[in-house]
Image (cartoon, rainbow, N blue to C red):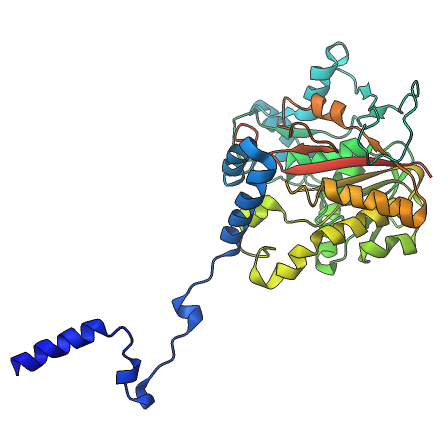
Length: 401
C-alpha cells in the first residue's frame, strides 16, 4: 500500500494538466479574463511612450517621463469679471502672475505696461511664402486682462477651490498654466471674431473672453455632453450680459466640416485638437485612449487632427491667424499634422499660409516653463519637475490668400 502511494505521488507530480484524469462532467474550463489579467491602459500608454519618445526626445525623455508620472502643477486663471478678494490671498501665499513677470523679464524698462513683440517668419519649408526682406510683421500685444497666477518654481502647493462672489461668479479657473499660451499667441485684438473649433471643457474659451476684445466668439465641440460642460463653465465665470446670442454661439457640429458651414469668416481661429493627452493617459484609466476598445480611434488621430486644422484654415478669413495646439509630445500629432494641413490647403484650395515664429513668446516665458529645444516648427512646453506644466504644443499660421 505504501509503495502504491509513493508511486501515485511521483506520477501526479509529473502531470501538469489533470483535466484528462478528471471526469468530463466535473471539468471546468479556465477563463482567460480571470487567469490572465489585462494590462491597464495607463501601463500600455507608458510602454508606448517609452518606445516612441525615447527615440524622438533622446536624452530629454527620462526627466520628462519622471515629471509626467508626478503630480502636475496648476495655474489660476483670474476671472476679470469677479469681485472676489481671493487674488490678494493667493498673492500673499507667494503666487505671481506669470504673464506680467514674463513681460518684465523681456522688457525691464516697461514692466508696468503690456508690451509688444514682433514675431518673425519661420524659416521652415512648410511656409508657402517667399520671404521678402524688409517687411515687418504686425506686433503681438498681450491683453492686460489675462492674468494667471502660479506658485514659484519647485513649489507644488495646491490651489484651494475658487469661491463665488456676491453675484455667483467664481474668482479663478484652475488649469495647466501652459494652456494659456495658445490664447496669448492667438493675439486677439479689439472687435475680432473668434472661432474655438474644439472648445470643451472651456478653459481656453474662458481665457479668450477674459481679453474683453472678442466681438463674437463661436465655441464648438462635437460632444454634446462636453458642450454642456462648456456652457456650465462659462455661466460660472462670465456675466449673463456677455453670453447673449450676439456675442456668443455654442454649437456641437463636426469640426472637420466647418469649412462647409462658415468659410472665410473669422479673424482668429483656435484649433485645440483631440490628442493622446499624454499626462491623462499615464495617470487615469477612465476614458483613456489607450484602452483596448479605442485602438482604432487612437490610430486615426493624426488624420482627424489634420482635417480639423484644415477646417480651421478654411474658416479663417484671408489675413486671419490660426493657432494649432495639442497636449501631447508626439511629433506625429504636432509638426507632421501642421505640415500635412498646410500642404492640403495649398493643393486642394489654393490657400497660401505663413508660419509665424513663436520664439519671442517662448523667450518671454522661459522663466516659467521649459520649452523643447530645436523644434523646426512651432513651440512646445515640456514637463519638468521644477515646473511641471505641459505638455503643450502650439503652432501659429497666417492665412495669406
